[in-house]
Image 1: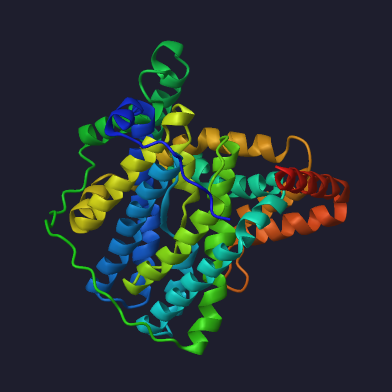
Image 2: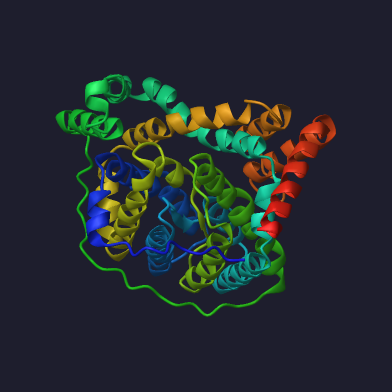
Length: 417
């Protein structure tokens, strides 16, 4: 039931050989992307819930530090660019719940959620479910998730036209050059161009940095039925139905065979460990996984995950310094870099969503996801999958019959083998 890791031992010599410029720059951009918008959501949720500074630091340490450890371990075992961290929809859900639930009660819900995810992984339901959900509908949802990030490339022109023009222009100039595109990572060049402009304009924040190491706190959970009913189902869906679905779909699209059951088990056990340290449940991060797969040789992209995981652990240990450094750069630059890194991924998502079958269901999944609607504290990405599947069951039954036939053939072949 659980996928076997690679048989060959991964040596330092092999890792150094596979350390391409593109995969390393992708790891850095994924880190910057993870540090800004997602970090703001986490801090906003924590502040809305009235958490103390110590509780916030412990939350961030668990979500980033343990996520970095899981990222490195899975990437080493399976040679795939896997990224694991906290769940953003979960943070938004918890931010509202903390206004009427105590922090130990929320921690209790974290732990129960982790147990539920672990049980799901032990049954193998997650992998079977991923095989039955049509890939075009999943990619329609993924396109809806990534579109707002890529739209920052347009909206930033109205906010900071010079920064947008120079950053985007340098990206496409390098990308269009056959001579330099394979040597200089376009996203890295765009980042350097943006940093140079910001430096010339002296737009960097000059807030003092605090050099200190975090001291995480272990919390005793309180198991409250109200908290269980309010949080466990939405948190479980946010991990398995939203984030993990995105990350797994991206890996499959890039030609990998992701260890779905092991990844789900890691998210379950990781959610228990993170929960006891005060963090929301862990998941496979869709945007970071997409950035890690945006360029570079397929067989070398796992090095990007190793680099990202290492940066996450360092950030977790020196969170005050890392936060200060990240906040020195304007948010517009990070938004531009994230949009540029996800541009090709968005293009591929559209191509896979509307190429052949389930096109109407994929369109519905895309529209619902982009709408950003929320029902029962569950985000639009999950409802996009639900809406797309329901519409295809009504309007595209022949496509579903085709998928079920292929699924039965695949199962019969595996049994014969």
